[in-house]
Image (cartoon, rainbow over all chains, first blue to last red; front, top):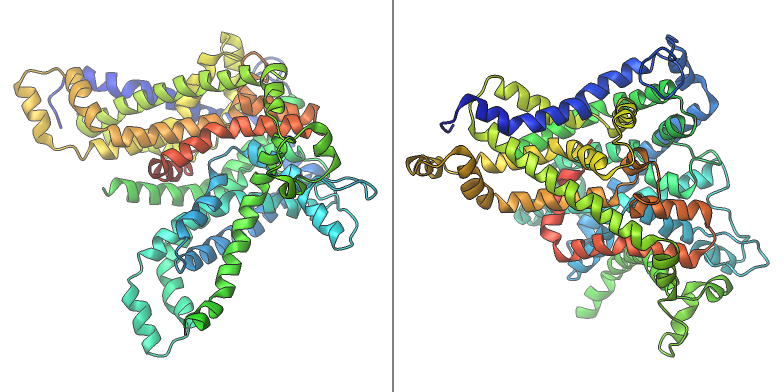
Length: 296
Length: 284
């Protein structure tokens, strides 16, 4: 500690604490309270009435909300699994080739660009035109070349469009998984592999009994981080379908209730659901982040 | 022997190639489409340009001129800079002040307050809009640059303060002792010793904050309400998609304009970028 006057410390930490208090701590509590009050765009006032659990009943019974909850579950399950699976596969495969860096850069690029940019890139990939016109989207051109009928990738509900969108999410987040898992993979001492191979283990055994257990901590980190990013998915949906055709997700619904329907009560309840869903994973993330960055 | 080894490794190379193509083709399609004329975009797939790639003639930068001049994307690009540069600077500065206070100064509740500050990462941004927007409207901060600067500053603080604090805590104490002997004030010590030493940490924080804010759509939609005169590039492009969703020549060019800066940062500063990204992934 350094010598300083008592008021000086507050000069240094005061601005940050005030900002956190006003922009994060107070709103979190106010949003939960607001979720028990009715529609309208003011916080709490004479025009806003107490409605008890009405908004909460809406969240868990309304058809559109149920679709959003189902889709978020689908995103979390399928999206997270594929991101980690592909990331792990790439980490292991790329370690064996000399052009590793180039491919890593290519797969990592989507992490640098905005969800809006990614949404447009893929909207064009999925472009659909009636069968008698020439297809300008890559995917439908492939389908037609193999003699199929063009597919309305973003319209065909309920599974084609949702899986198409989830594929976009996987394209966006796999690079992140690959980079973290690859760093962990390269930390495994090579003699371990050699020893196992000399003992007669084949590649599958090496992966199953040496690589996987040693990568476990890194896989856990990537899983919680990707889960949080996926549960909060918004930009891609907003740009590509705006939640139409049964592709709604929680974050987009929250935005609609707030900004389009001016129903702060419902919107508050939806935001709180999102908050509760991510709490366990965020706690793990923060603890890991603090342990890792604080240890240096 | 060599050929056998090569053959046995073919599946490996093919698998990697397939991944590389899936990650390359979509972005390449966007880039090529953005320099084709509207009639050729509608008439044939972008991949048909490859056979005539070197005969030239088909490509032009007209679409870019169109979006920047006529669709007001030039203005949005400037707005994005007007939002991200000051917001990033302010948040890095506020975080540095707090980080120094928490790392080196004595005051009541130091530990508890630090835990609260870092723990605030847990709050998703969605939890903050509803209470803040009415207050912003009342005091006239909604739809203004200072309003969104403050919001972005606050949202980035937990991660930024923590990163800078852990760096500053590692500065050797002797440096402060000698500064104290020379009679330097706390403020002077901060500016002339602590800040210059902390440049590596500040650079990572600056980059992740800048990219996060540049790529943000949600916060801008809420606090700037889509007003064209202040809208950043992400919001303008999202509107373009809604209003002219089939005008691919405009949308692809616009998307590429918005991606140019992050891509430059990505390829130019990859080392800082990866660290910054890791930090950004735990942001509320």
